[in-house]
Length: 390
Image (tube, rainbow, N blue to C red; front, side):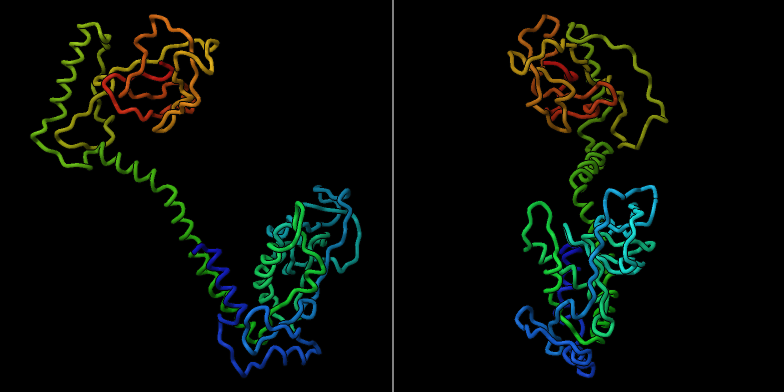
């Protein structure tokens, strides 16, 4: 269950009278309405609620103030005039829009007033900034404290508005009309029970936040797990911790000497070029400890590198006889074959650049290039040509 699903479940229990117990001594919602000269709707089949509750229309329980139609041509962000609350400001609780247009003082919104956006997702929030003026398509809903707890309404509105959001007709943007708000039904508990419901929800909200934080960490872990696991396995492998060492298999020193003998034979046969002597490995170059039978060597001493041939880009074609691999084709453990280019002819100089199964490719261009540090999935072979080759 996601954190939002958990929160929705708790709120759903709350408005069905299943979050806290009912107490006969607290009376009934019908008695509460009668005392204030209000009537119930008589609707009992909308949602199952406790016997001590009743249904009432929102306008009988709260005052609804619709925003003033300010002239948007007079809006500014230079703080000329007074701040104006627009739909986009409801959740942030702050506005950068100002206007010098005057209107009736009843449209003045104060910190703590509850606002509802009448377009889009019908957001509900308490205003949390300086006094500002209420613009059109935003409304303020103030509960009658003798009948309805403001926070009970605050917790209920997102549920009913989400249901309305999924049912109202719209073209490009959904709109919440005064007609819809006037017909909105509220499941009304006795006032004391409303207060207990609000207290229980507020008690649970910090736990939901903790659950959300743990959920977010878990989701992040699940997203990173395959890559992190692979890195961990590879790290253990190169440190000699993945499998056991067996003395009968020889040592890294013995293998190194065998490779040097083979390379010397290839040099004498003219198959590879002689390398310049490589410097000894200094102690401060060694990044971690390895098993006793292993040996640190420089890569160039046990491999044969071949930089790619500089083919002329003006000869590249989307189709042709010979396919070329460039840096752009190199992904992480895969090749982007669909992005390869072709040439129609090759010269004698390009013979040694032909790739064979088992060759490994490594991006060797500018360090800003996307291919740097990326390998092909071709299994490692003795000969390792670089990219831009055929």
